Image (cartoon, rainbow, N blue to C red):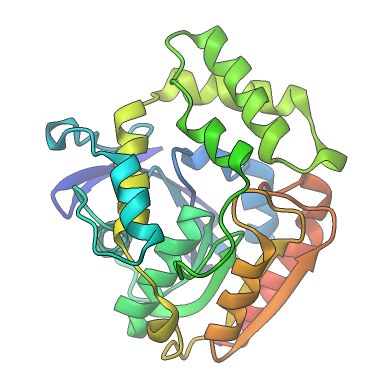
Length: 293
């Protein structure tokens, strides 16, 4: 792994595949580190001819933690967002999209395929809106347009994300298991893998205040629907029909908003990316990305 300084922060990143591959950037979700893009998922994309870049978003893992910005009042932001009112936050998804653009600059990459999961899908959408000339294709996974009229998360799903953060490695592992028992796909639940990821994430660096700032960025960034209608890049929307955190209608709305979108829906997928579904996901990501060539 390596680090670059850009957009006023340092970003920890890792590259898979040769420089001759088509660049593909993977953006992870709320409080999630780049290692949640599993090595073998990245390798599947490399095998299709891509140069895969994954990274830690600001305020998580080994990228810069912006603790000097304080902890936002997330409940007040949720109330404002639900009523369609403007909300203030330490930074917004646009700043996180600019981080992605800065990473590409540092790597000398002019254009890339942009793939994001959950909050990462929101950042990917924002990148495609802000940097259309740099977006070869867009893949938005279990994400949303930010339309406040869409169905909200299931109460138990949002409550696990707002629960007190762990203070020890053991607590972090148990919390990871609890989170994915709540929001993950029951059919594909793999406790051993979740424990391993939770332990590695704790060891790399867990930043509870940073997660709240990331959540504030989501809540303050508004509705992207109209802006997405102007995205000309080929797009793929992947969503699970039983997602309790970002309900399936959010994926449908994202696909409707994007002019060149294909929707790939999985009946038994919740808010995670189950390993048995990877081959179909990678096939679809590759198929849509090839439309840009």
